[in-house]
Structure formats: structure tokens, C-alpha cells
Amino acid sequence: MYTINKSYTTKTEVKKSKFITYLVPISEYNGLQDKLKKDNPKSNHTVYAVRYLNEYNQIVENSSDDGEPKGCAGLPSLNVLRGKDLINCAVLIVRYFGGIKLGTGGMARAYALSVKDVIEISDIIEYKKMVRYVFETSYHNIEKTNYNLKKLEITSIEREFNINSVKWSIETTQEAIDEVIKFLDF
Image (cartoon, rainbow, N blue to C red; front, side, top):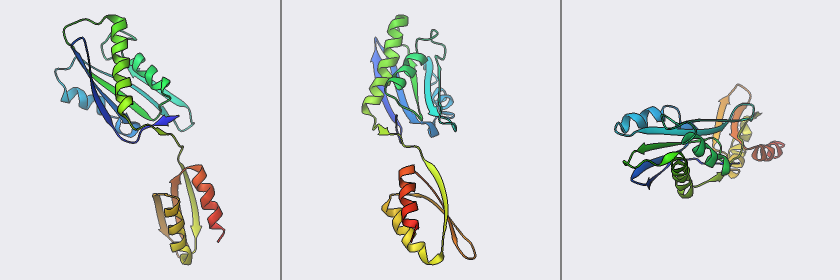
């Protein structure tokens, strides 16, 4: 599985219709469709497709044709995300009608092409599930722990200073947590 960690935008034109396509991380998805509709009041449609992992590690998918003929916009967009094995991201396509009807097949191809175009310019990365790990150290091991976490490129770190120890909470991959466990045996 693959994902992205920042947003990308492209413009695709098919028979004078303009498709402005946004590929965004799932964290930026909520409310974006409404914002795009507000920012593009003369556009005809704002289609979306989304794929993400829920808390049970299941892939959740959804799409909307936003007034286009049923199955001609959202589903072809979602199928491109499926084909590229992308998760935890959403694609939104703002369409400006160019005056030439595309037909249902042409429309499906145009939406799929616009999604392929934005994926082509995107920096696709391998998805790695993040896991939270909590552990404690003594005060005299703070510097060594910080050094080892930095060496493992772990950046999501929270610390709680207690009377006799420091409670650490980190979020990283399982592989990195296995390495943390090894260095904790000071």
C-alpha cells in the first residue's frame, strides 16, 4: 500500500472541459469539498473519491458523482486510487463544463485521466502503519534516550516528568519500536 504526505494539484482539459484535480492526505480532506465549491462558484461539479484505513485496519472507500451521471465520475476516480493501491488520501476534482458533452464513457475516461495526471506528479511513498508506544526511563537516561530516538528518526515524542522517572510516548513504525525496545535494555 502507498500514500502521500502532502497535497498535489493538476489541471487536465478534455474537449474544452477543465478538470482541476486535488490529491490530498486524508487529514486535509474534511471540509475541502465545501471549500472548493465556495472557491469555484462557476464550476459545475466537485467530485471526490476517498480511501483510508480505519482503526480496525480495514480499507474504507467512498466516492461522489456530485450531479454527474451515476457511476461516471466518482467511481472511475476511486478505481484509479484502487489501481495505484493508494490509501489515507482523497482526490477531489472540480469540473468546469466546456460546452461539449463527453458522454458517459468519455466522462468516466476524463475523470480517470485527471486522477492519473495528479498521481503522476505526486511523490508516492510506501505506507507504514504508525504505532504508539509508551515506556519509562530514569532521569539519568534522558540524553541517551533522546539520542537513540533521534538516530531512529522518531519525531513524534511526548514526555511526562514524574517524581522518579520520565514517561515517554512515541508514535512510529513497529520496526522502529522494536529497535527502541533493544536500546531500552541499558
